Length: 115
Length: 114
Image (cartoon, rainbow over all chains, first blue to last red):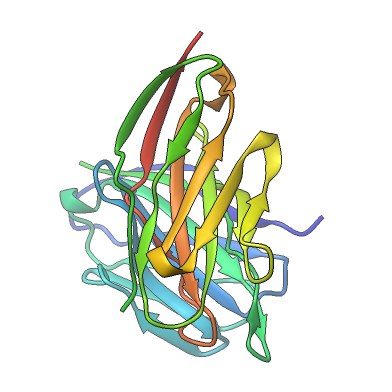
């Protein structure tokens, strides 16, 4: 079955370190998204991609970067981790073509703690 | 840019009570609408979706939602909740023919007492 997987599921890192969260989907979806989930804020969009070599900033992109070198993967990098980036991170993907799109499918999430 | 409002942030019910969670969106064009559920410690799962056609949409686990275009609303309902419905519920909007970016509401935490 097609799926979307995130790794690691849990990560503890120190302030100032670079951290990369992996996201891999086998749906062959062209759209991929990264969200962070914080109490009282719901899901906020960090970055998104419409396809290979395409990346775009979301509403809370400061301190984060992504790259899309193939259809399946959209790794999220925290350039210099800060305590404010302690959160649960969700990767999602969806498909669109010719004006039609699917719902977003979510990974299991990565709980990141910055100490 | 579109936005989504969920008016009920916390809802507490007893088993067998009826549920209605409100969702309003702001976007001038055609939209696709979704409700997701997140059980404790898990990822978001799709409950139901609306793309076009009958504005009354039935989803999994006895949930349904009604799209009222004139009110920009997509409220979630269930006639009789169960303890296992305890979860966080998110309404989401994707502009059709636009950015295709899902925008989520802040979520509603539902606690069902046995």
